[in-house]
Length: 315
Image (tube, rainbow, N blue to C red; front, top):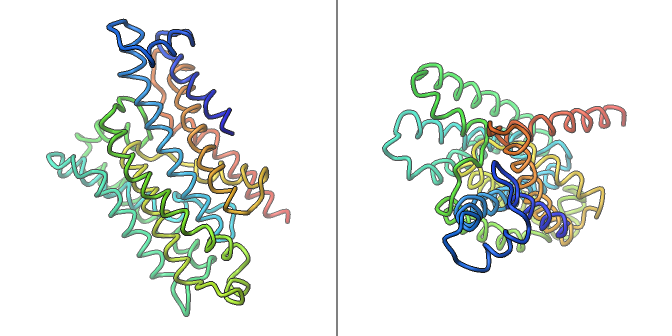
């Protein structure tokens, strides 16, 4: 998986409207100069690739945690309403309060957190069972999606500035975007390390986790909050990029199993590799048009989601 990530990053630095050989990419990274290759690699492609890496890590880790907490391979930040909550908050800022665009990341996180709180409250009845959480999440997700659509219809003259973000895109992402997302990612990964044991217990089921001394409800709440934090941070920078938290953890689980000591870091690496590879394909395959990476991932992820659903029905 590490080799796959490094290969995706190298191809991402080489590919684009102007192809740059691997040797020139390496030279541009190591030696400062005024060459065209240095400007393209260092100022345009490298921050874009690194921002995609961080976003993929955040989304994949969030999805891996949520699938474990809900014991459901179909769970991810988009399905339970977290992404829609962050999306609605971000759309409100971009359409109604564009002068406060600097507060977009924190607004998206607070929106995602509010959506998670509503879902948890609706699912609570002597505890929040995974089934009730998913059902409440689907309902909240639909409601928030309708809210975003209504807001854009009522402000149709401003929709053009929101569409790229709604589609999920790394176009125009630069070093300030990377610098903004980096501390969220670092804090989220450090917190994740302390919840690995809790996640391993919750995968066994609530009863087994209680017998082994786990605090089920507290642990589930902490993991949902952490997943909300990671997903909200990612979508605030790259927009509504979906299916990373669904596809990557499921594939990694088939390869390495459910032990979060291995499962979580491999999922993080795989998420970064997928977003970088998808973004490279989106801006290379459709040249001169930059296809939104979120749409490409949806085209790939939706059939995979249907495959998982069909497989579950057969079981």
